[in-house]
Length: 402
Image 1: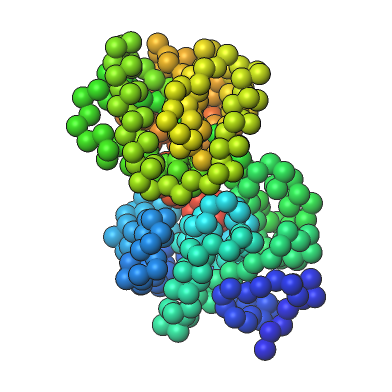
Image 2: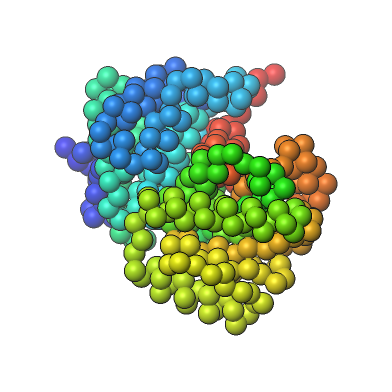
């Protein structure tokens, strides 16, 4: 029998099919990285990797690899050094509407930190959501002690349901733009509860052309760049919109030609281009051209739009477009990007730089933004350190025993 408060009447339960919220709320928290969760995630991974439907979606396959026991145990070594920690209780996750698989990573962080999890998935119908929900359902009997801590819900933007879930959560996680966060914050959470917000962010890439001109596997690199950008239509906060080129003039010219030619070939093979995107790109270009000194690079079609900046404006993050629209800037030094990096900047992808140089760049300039500096191809790879948060520590409480 379903016991659901009146303000949940319009909530669709994707998993489980029915729930007694009163009993569900009474479950105890677990320790981080419990054996039962590790085993469940490994079984979940195996199920997804064998699923023919799941293999059609690269983001689901990536999720499956993330959940493998070997990877989770590595994460345990990195994040579970303190023994006296317990999950905070109930985590209410509000997933973004434009990145289909994000909800699953948020859920996994909640499980690994020992919590019960209510996950509001996007109101949009994404096949990836159904694949994940089905896999959890198939494992529900064998791993009931873990799956009982999961509730996947879907509802339209509703203050009533959001207010209802917020009223009894111990942690509220919001993935979304500033407007979404502001609206959800109108629904109060208990005084002892905490909130974690993953707001709208901006990301860029830096490329050392002196190294790129010698790249022997250009298609492999540009396929990685495709995964960073086109795989989510550049809607993910970690997707680069600005590319900064460094190196000699001759190498920059040669490297850019090779790189973008290969990118277009990959995009034409893989990307499902929608005509409305062409209109969006023209509109974005006109808006950007009014405010900034830019030049549109020649293109065969609308698959890849590139505009070259004359000056690196400190408000460049206000000018972006989805679906393959890139702003480029040719710099003489990596330090030229320092003035534009605000706390809105999330990820910087790179090619052709040493890790040591990038550490010195971040620390030496005391950057107020950039929480992640990763190789091209790794921008969308989920980590338990996200947006500057250590999710295991954030979603647990430390118990002191003297």
